[in-house]
Amino acid sequence: MALSIEDIRQLYASHGGIAYSGEPVTQLEHALQSGMLAEQAGASEELVVAAFLHDLGHLLNLQGDSPTVQGIDDQHQYFALPFLRRVLPEAVLEPIRLHVDAKRCLCAIDPEYFGKLSADSVRSLKLQGGVFSQEEAQAFLAKPYAQDALQLRRWDDRAKVEGLETPDLTHYVALVAEVAARHAEPRTV
Image: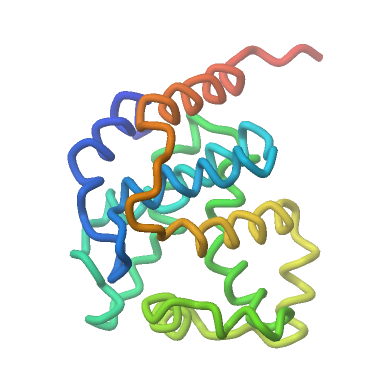
């Protein structure tokens, strides 16, 4: 079953007020901040949409405010993909799928990265398989969309600012609709 654009809007409207895993923002605030950071960086519309939607799986697989405290990896990076696959292109889906592994990779390749993680990100890192080995990191970096996922991860880490002004939900849902409409256009050979 594919999610419609209205379904996505409704998920954020209904569940966006849930706390973002021990951070001073809600799920919706985190999504809006992530999308804004991507826009400010001049990212493609597809990557802005990926940044906005990267944690949608948390809203589809409700595990409470902070599942990591309970020892739960909700595998949110995978959970939304079956619902989005018929609606959005790989340029959106793959950075979403890879953003957790991007954290594992950044811990392996950036000596300062781990020290900047929030307490919840450290807990989830352990549940998600821990820091990549150098070989795993190199294999990750060779994947299509790995660089987009690394950038998304950095926005994800920064999108936790209490009270930050952002464009609203309507702005990002409209962008999702634009990207989805382009994806649905018939391809010419």
